[in-house]
Amino acid sequence: MTAILDIQRSRAEQARLDFVGGLMAFNSTGFGPAMGAYYRENETRLKDPCDIREVGGLMEQGHAYRFGAFFERHNHAQMFRAILDILERQGDEVRAWLDDCNAPGSLGSLELDTQLETPRYYRKIEIHTQPGNYHAEFAGILYHRMISPFLVGRDDGDEMGWNLARAVPQGDYRRILDLGCGVGKSTFPYCELYPDAEVVGLDYAASMLKYGHRLAESRGHKVHFTQRLAEDTGYPDASFDVVSAVWLFHELPGKVRAAVVREAHRLLRPGGIFAIMESPPFKVLQEDFSPLSAFLLDSTGRRMEDPFLPGFLAEDRVRMFEEGGFGLVRDVPLPNELTGWGFGGEYFFGAYPWWATIGVRP
Ligand SMILES: C[S@@+](CC[C@H](N)C(=O)[O-])C[C@H]1O[C@@H](n2cnc3c(N)ncnc32)[C@H](O)[C@@H]1O
Image 1 (cartoon, rainbow, N blue to C red):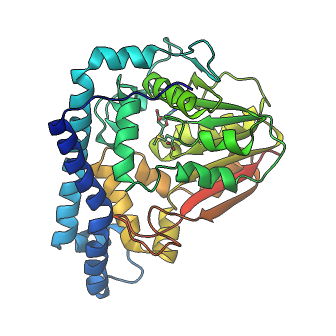
Image 2: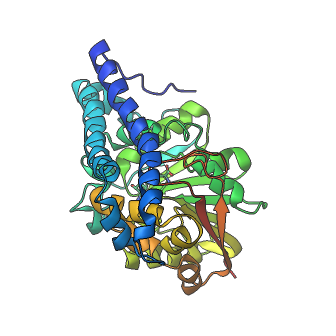
């Protein structure tokens, strides 16, 4: 097994990382209870039922949300900067490590397409405020290093990916495709659950895939990573048994979401499974959990350069799957270690399940 990059850092760099990482973890768990308490004390001032804008109007009047929103954006910037400073100082070494792919004896592989263009919907934003987006040269390392404190260490065992992989009905699967696989966190569970299957991780961003490939090899997972677009993969019809996507759909414009569903339908053999996982739709949050969570997700989308998140959370996912040709479509709430749903905790955005949508190719 190859080792994962041991990024050298001075004591001062480590101290800065610990400090901003600690603040990030506090942002994720410390503000939620304060915002929840303010909301509960004041919710009688809202109409019943109330919409997202009214909740926003209420929350804007309190210190907890105003400070939390300011803190979220600036803390992310500090976190990314702290990691980037360390990577850029040893840039040549990091670049050489990332480029050292498909080494002899590799379990899996990495297939890059240098001609693939960045999707136009990512050209004018920096998604989640990540500098240079998913396709900047150190994006994979940046994403992996940031996500741990952001998720308060509760996804260090790839829990989100495991949740969806376990929710996929078990079967004798030969080929599994993870769309928008990033650094592979949502892909690796399939290697363990279906050791005889060929597991493919697909992403548009070379930098995510390069790091994912090195991470997979370091963990002994056999994954074939490929640089393609989820909406236009180029694979033959009916060539997969399972197609899945974790946290991809909320980052896509509506027309592209519909195109990805149609592409998944084309790629699956009859009886094949399509499964995605995201936060619950606004309607579910408002009716079954908390209108505050709906507002916080909506506002973070606007604040943190996640421009398609509000449109996606307003969409009926069962209908989206059915319009793409899927049958037996259902929404499945999954345990959520991160927000504490089912675990008694609380998070910046509130406590609610992860939301899987699963359909079958007729
Ligand atoms: C939020 S990350 C999730 C990564 C991974 N699924 C996980 O759960 O850790 C979204 C990923 O989708 C990829 N992505 C976004 N749009 C894409 C597209 N149209 N085609 C392929 N990949 C895409 C991004 O590069 C990024 O790696």
